Image (cartoon, rainbow, N blue to C red):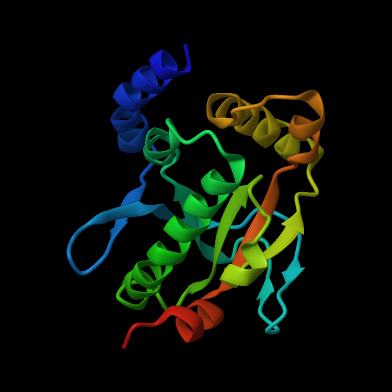
Length: 186
């Protein structure tokens, strides 16, 4: 059944992509990695990052989206949760230098303060250079929890109420300075 839903999602994903103003981040070989991004205005509460960057309402950020259907397709046959986690971690780690290069060449690079993402997969984020912050808006948190629950059901090998409850969506931030310092290829 999961395979059937993944096939439908894979078919519908280009339609979703067309309506969301997302852009693929590619590396030098033009290989499509797992990030899709768009410039956005931050609408949450003020956040101070560890390097001193202050994110305020209406600041310009680069929102990153994992290409979930691509990841799920790659992980479809992998049953071990630890191997799945390692694969996702390695995929993100491999994609971050391309994200740094993308941002370095972006026409709005001077205005973009940080990259932002929302995920329930926040274990290991610090090792990648991201900081996690709670989503303060209960309505937005509930909306994100519902959407991530659907992704979780399609991706998990063992679904339990306890595991679903412990995966709370959180903001991920990394300042553009930190991203450039850590992942710049030049």
